Image (cartoon, rainbow, N blue to C red):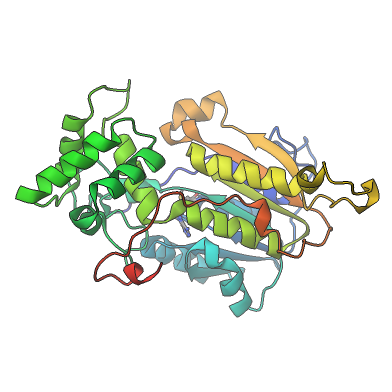
Length: 357
Ligand SMILES: C[S@@+](CC[C@H](N)C(=O)[O-])C[C@H]1O[C@@H](n2cnc3c(N)ncnc32)[C@H](O)[C@@H]1O
């Protein structure tokens, strides 16, 4: 069955990468740029089903390159089809945090634009066998990369109550995290949790109040997914990498769907845009103050029509920034990106992932 993804903030995100006159309204100036196509190397770090990539290709010159990444083998299968149809495209099955190394393997050390459209795609949610949906009966998997890592079922079978509480409270911002963690630990003593509906029903029984229009298991599913896929760590890694590979004048555009992701993007851009702020109290002459590495081009939200038309769009935030020509500080800009892993990771018995620290 072919699952469809409706891209969020499609035009604004593509304009953000290629329109020289892009501003926070997300629109190109009337007439300007119409038909003009730009050269250079671009990266779509989250190909999904290629909605953004396909529109971007219509704006790229014949000699431009577009390297697309996705962790998900099914997304990469779709990307390989596009690669077969358009010689400007190269598909890479990898997490986007590893983009610098994977681009170097292709002989690329600098790029003109990077797009990250975070989170899960509709095909991932709609395909019950992926285990992301609390509405559809399926195995408790929740891995974006089904070729590696720990499944939700494996993690829930052995995580301590405290680990589960921490993950659900932090990544799900769930008030009843402790009650949910206790319920999971109690239930698995008699019967293991095997399916999405097993978990959804258990959580519904442990959560005492209902949020309007939201299934009681929404926050728990989101939390486990973010944790297992290391979504915030990957994002922090990518933000550091992007600072290093963006050419002067190059743009980064990130679409987030979660407040923790958006905060990380916002704080990283702000720190790189105002590196002097950290040293403002030191007796450094104005001319020796560190200069901006990025210029923020603003924040864009979906308009009312898009939000009415596509539920996924309602929580979306697009942030855009442009690299200046100022060299990176000695740490490569790592200090601009806040530390992100407040939830401790314990080794998972018997998994490849478990051997990492
Ligand atoms: C919201 S969808 C992207 C949709 C895409 N922009 C489109 O228009 O079709 C997010 C995609 O990013 C992928 N993804 C999430 N985290 C990733 C990571 N760290 N590295 C690579 N891909 C990732 C997911 O597998 C998913 O396919």
